[in-house]
Image (cartoon, rainbow, N blue to C red; front, side, top):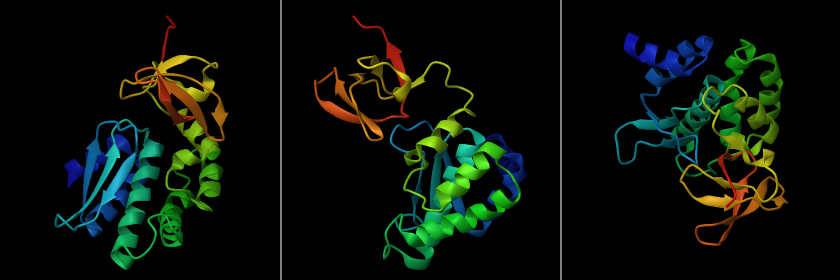
Length: 205
């Protein structure tokens, strides 16, 4: 038990650890801390093929992003227990549970003041990913510790050459709402890439 708490303390804001640990015990969650994934920050798997709830969260998230992501997935767990797969994954039931779960953290001022209000605003109509809220994502990124060798796509000049985490190389194109139309230099196909994607800049040949 103490070992589990010590692990959580490495990834979560200090004042949130006790609450999260109680959730993990109560819902019998198997928490898996994974390597960085480009397509998601975390996920939830119900006890269908295995006799336990499994939640995974990327290891490289800062403590505030980790807490937000983990709570997001626990909300999925609660919705599954109440409704199984009879409701939409990010429908009103999930939005309601997510907001309820986040309440103690907001009441206890666990988040810095500049994040606090943005999270309240986001929870009014939470989306499938916190990354869909560009203002919140930008601010959460400022708390990252190990992103010195990466940049945000939207900060790069037009026509910049860059790589994403899976190694694919692109040339930055025009912006289409929250994404950029980029040409993949590996296969000459066009891809829409999130404006706040982490990328590595490369020199033009």
